[in-house]
Amino acid sequence: MRRLIAFSLIMVFLAASAIPALAYGPRIKDVAKLQGVRSNQLVGYGLVVGLAGTGDSNKATFTIQSIVNMLKTFGITVSASQLQPKNAAAVMVTAQLPPFVKPGDTIDITVSSMGDAKSLQGGTLLQTPLKAANGAVYAVGQGPLSVGGFSVGGGGASQQKNFPTVGSIPSGAIVEREVATQFEASGSVVFVLNKPDFTTANRVSEAIDRRFGPISKARDAASVSVYVPLEYAGNLVGFVSALEELPVTPDNAAKVVVNERTGTVVMGGNVTIDTVAVAQGGLTVRIASSTEVSQPQPFSGGSTVVTQNKTVEAKEQPAPLIVLPATANVSDLVSALNAVGATPRDVISILQAIKAAGALHAELQLI
Image 1 (cartoon, one colour):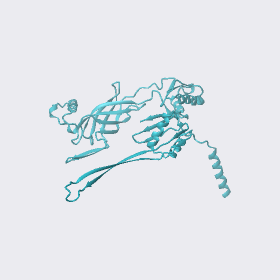
Image 2: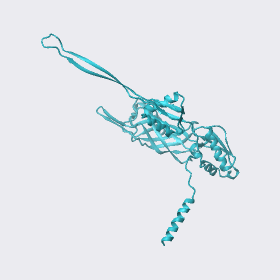
Image 3: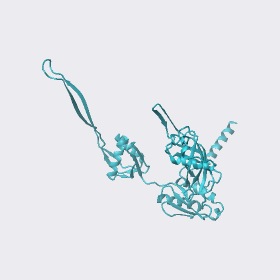
Image 4: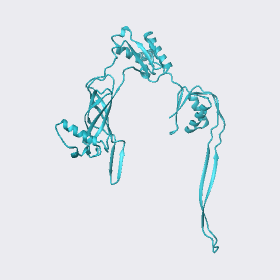
């Protein structure tokens, strides 16, 4: 029995080892997107009601005018001078319309005050048409707001958390119109790289050709055109899915990103330097001030004098000259800089000096 169990375990191990390892890495869908498949921006003007006295003041005449116009649609006629819009606020409503959404689907919306309202907490957005750049209405938003903040005050003291004049409504808009795309009408598809690069575009084309034959062409550094094979003419979705799953290794230019305000340095994996000699020291200047009192001798006729004595001390840290060898990867460069004992801000100065000397083979970007 024990031999049978041991034999079974060996067979399971051999069967598992025979399964090819899954390749983990970037895919085409991670470095590129299908041309024409994109989101669209929507915007609308609306009213938020139900506020607890934190709405717009009488100075926001557009809010009063909006309330008057809204009431007219319900057959109610009021004068603008009779309104006190402290429980209402004029807002702008924005949203992103994803591709391939259908009428009846819901999308998230963001509601932002455009008057002098103090808070939108507890408010409800009235029905608001959301328009695209062409002026057509693609969605309608309405519902209670979720505000991730508050503002309270009293007796001359106040406290505020986050931004209470901006709220959101998850699934708060219903899509009324579908955006037409040319996805089904073309015999070819075009992939647009997220970051244009000639090498990456060529690698994407080569990966497609290895899988489906010579059906692709890198048109430039940003786009790769792919012709749809006849066997996929009626299954374009399956063809695009197969393309997106193909592995590809993107190529990136060597870059070092430096944030001098926070002392942050981020280096890409393909950053290299030539052999350089670095001496990193620091000069510290300390100025101290002390107060001394000069007291005259008794019966001398003098007066007490207060004097300020200042001492200046300059101290320079020893900076031995260390040679950084030519490196082939970022880990070697980091190890060499750590050997110098450099702090993040010292690293920034060293990298700038190495770049000025022409020994840093990377783009140095300051943010």
